[in-house]
Length: 202
Image 1 (cartoon, rainbow, N blue to C red):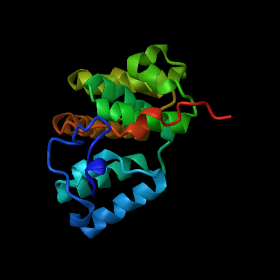
Image 2: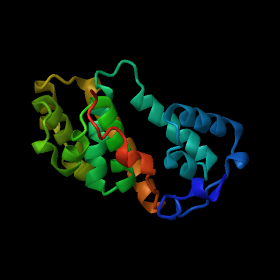
Image 3: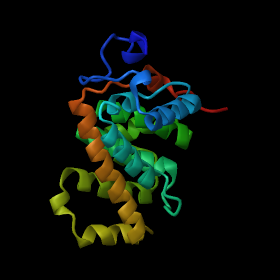
Image 4: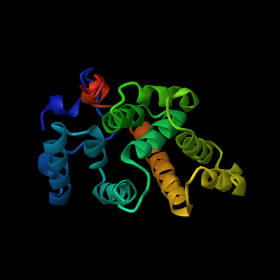
C-alpha cells in the first residue's frame, strides 16, 4: 500500500498502531476490505486500522453486522445511525461522528441532520419517538447505572417493544467499544466522509 493510502490528507497516520499493507492481510480480511472499497470507492480507515489484530477485526465486524444488518429490526438504517452519531458525540469520538454522520446523511437524505444530532438531538428535526430513542441511548451511554424500568416504559409508550430496546442497547454498547478503540488508536477519518452527501438530493 502506498504512503498516501496509509495517511490522511494532513499527513497524519491513520492510526497510532501499525497498519498492515493489503498484501500482508489474511485472505478473508482482504476480501472484505476490497468489497467495501468496490462499493464505497475508498477504504474507510477503520478497516485498515483494525486489521492490526486480525482476530479482533473478525469479531468486531461480526458483531457489527449482527446488530446493524439484523433483518427483523424495526429501526431504520437512518435511526441506527442517529444512535451512533449521538452517542459517539457524547463519547467525544471524532472518527465515528464524522464517518457515521456521513452515513446518516446518506440514509436520511437530510444534509444537515447529522450535525444537528451530534450537537443536540433535542433541537434536531426528528420525531418525538426518535427523540425518546436517543434519550435512552444517551442515558445508557453516559450513566448506565441509572437506567431503570421507567426508561423502558417511556420507550414502550412511544411504540418500541423489548426487541427494539435490545437493538438500541446493542448499537449503543457496540459503538461505545468502537468509540474507545478509535480514540485510543487515534484513528483518523477519511477525507471522503467529511463531504459525503452534503448536497441535498434533487
